[in-house]
Image (cartoon, helix red, strand yellow):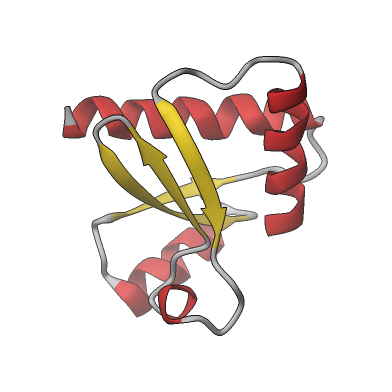
Length: 103
């Protein structure tokens, strides 16, 4: 699942779609400290870091919320049968919304 997100962001980067406010994105290594806290990615923006957990359904979101109860992590449902461009748009829209809340 995380690999598909990386592919979607590489697809967007190749086309020049990455907004200027998004400085960098990092996938957290499996079994790392941040991964253990429920963070799949850290998106570094002009207003700070946004921690993201990617799930394949809202059921998985509910299970995650019961286990982690961390409101600082942005939870995003990704349909992995979507095209890379759609996956990118869904994620970047959610991150931008969170970014505006932080700004």
